[in-house]
Image 1 (cartoon, rainbow, N blue to C red):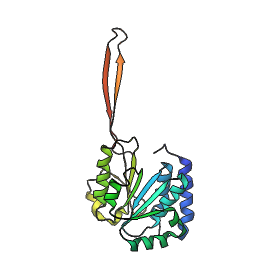
Image 2 (cartoon, helix red, strand yellow; image 1 turned 90 degrees about the vertical axis):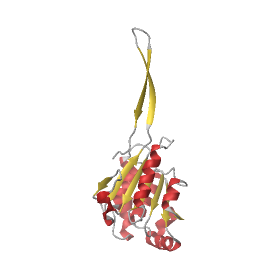
Image 3 (cartoon, helix red, strand yellow; image 1 turned 45 degrees about the vertical axis):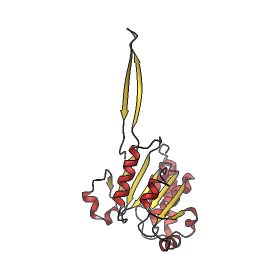
Image 4 (cartoon, rainbow, N blue to C red; image 1 turned 90 degrees about the horizontal axis):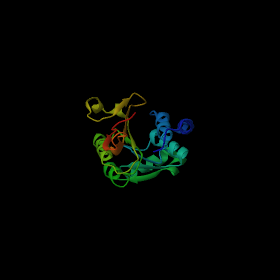
Length: 209
C-alpha cells in the first residue's frame, strides 16, 4: 500500500457522495471511501453480512479512483441478486463471490490490502482476529487495513479483546492496520579501534491509526 494521497481521498469522497444519491441510508460511506482511496488500496475485499449496501458502494468508488480491484463476499445467491439491484450500474465494477468469508480472506484473498468486515457477520471477531494474526507471519512487505463496519449493531465491541480502535462514524467503525514484524542488522565500526559491532534492530507495528 502506497503513501497517503489527499487527492485520491478527496476525489473518492466526492465520487461516493454522487453515487450515494441513489443508495439507502449512508454508513460513514464517504469516510470509508476516502480511507481506502487515500491509502491507494489496490485490492479491496468486503465481506457482507447481508446484501451489499453503501459500504460496498463506497469501496467501489475508491477502487475506481485508484484503479484497483474490489471483491465482495456474500453468503448466498439471493444476497448476490439483491446486491446487484442495490448497487445498480456500479455493480459492474464489483466482483461478487459466494462463500465463507474467513476461509476466502485467509487463503484466496490473502494478498488484499484493504479489508472491510460487516460486524453483522456472526464470526466477524474471529475473522478480524485471524487477519491480525496472519499479518504477524506475513512474508510480504505490504500492510493491510482491516475495517469492521456496523460495529454499533453488535454490543460485543464493548468487551471485545480485538486490538482495534472504535470510531463513532456512521454505524461505528473498528479500525486497525496490520504490519509484519521487521528486523535489520546494523554494522557499526569503531573509528578508533577498527572493531566491528553488529546490532539486530527489531520493530513491529501491530496497529497504526
